[in-house]
Length: 115
Length: 112
Image 1 (spheres, rainbow over the protein chains, first blue to last red):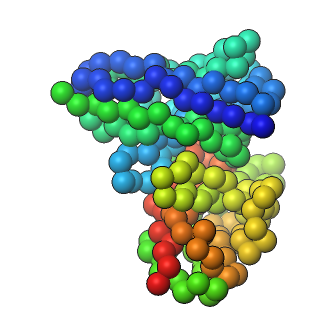
Image 2 (image 1 turned 45 degrees about the vertical axis):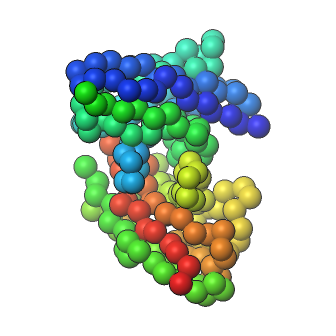
Image 3 (image 1 turned 120 degrees about the horizontal axis):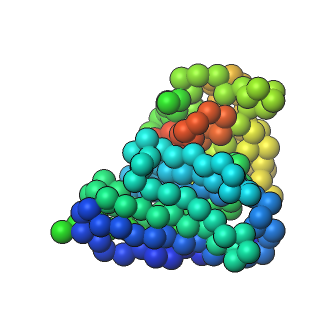
């Protein structure tokens, strides 16, 4: 069974940093690209970032480009999102999702940016 | 960026009746490989999103056959042939052809 479990969310002050993680199991992690998607409270889905299966290529939404870094450890079946210079508008639930067409999603981890 | 526009944004439906959601993209979603990467997701209240349809019309495993996807180019539709209580939630289209990936605003399906 495919499982994606996010962690690392929490309350952080504006300008602070946070590192999100997504632990994957039930499939060959190194064979799939992975994505992060954000959902602000009561709002819709916003795509954030993607990393290719071998980590050789990454893509970012303009809203996080230059402030966030997506990475993966295929030996540990783990996906990360390092977020710096956090702003109030980064607040939301962050989901990791598998594959080019986002076929499986985790339960999400909540990030709150507030003073 | 490719803008995905869904309509309607709110869809009250009677149980057992059909429902239809439109999704239009600001650019063609036909990829250089010939595929059209248009996906549909369902998000039930309090749950994570779940993919229903990929590449316009392919139903995911376990998705009831009352859900169907159609369309081409820039114009796509998700249809529910007979709405059931468990179909309540928000439905999103998402394009997987162009960077950055983009979602529609979401369509909230509720029972009348």
